[in-house]
Amino acid sequence: MQIVLLTALGVGGATIIGAIIGLIFKNISHGFKDIILGFAAGVMLSASVIGLILPSIEYDNKFSIVVTVAGIMTGALCITFIDKLVPHLHSISGVKKSDDDEKNEDISKLFLFVLAIAIHNLPEGISAGVGFGNENISGAITVALGIALQNIPEGMIVIAPMLSAGISKVKAFIIASATGAVEIFGTLIGYFAASISSAILPFSLAFAGGTMLFVIGNEMIPETHAHGCEKGATHSLLIGFSLMLILDFILK
Image (tube, rainbow, N blue to C red; front, top):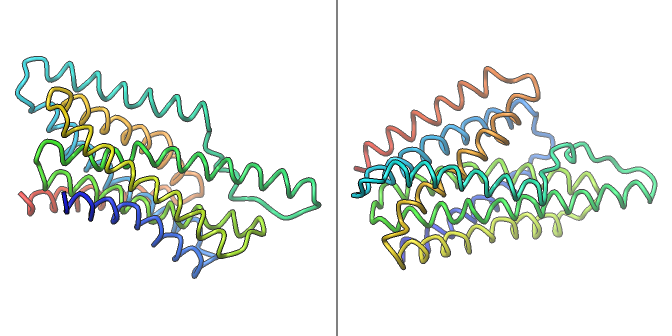
């Protein structure tokens, strides 16, 4: 249980680290952000497959492949529904101060953007916690590390539009930290849910893997290819993927 708590704090704390970096380095180029995000996407891709999906398939059940596929698709559909409910507003990063009416509208969109990130962080946290349910500590750490690395550039991205909208540094940091705190609760929820019943563990692992795959394919990769740094982001993704393969091999 102690390692789960430390993992939860690490996953949530990574967002705070990203927010601090965003406060210190306000004018980070899109290209650099895309390379970091591409690396995080590679890490998460490897972690989702190695730490969640493969353990689900390997679970001792003759219907394991059916359960795994069902879990992946259900996880993806869950995130799709969340996207419909509270869509990500990537264009908010271009917020500019204007007259009062436009500024108020921009700030309203901004908080919707932050809320969307917070909601998306819950299933990511659950993914980190579920991995500990099958007692595969190395796989669980791989998944948690992948999510944590992804949270650093996310924390940087959250800070920038808030500062552009005129929100104070203190308030912006508190709000960004709150989005990371959601993942701490998600990690604990995932751990306890997977620990209660081993019968639902294969589905839970695949569900968590499906949510991560959807986030990677629908949000992270398109974002890294939107600012003219596609090759650098792709190479960075491959480096992140390979690094997690090596880490998983070492931890086993």
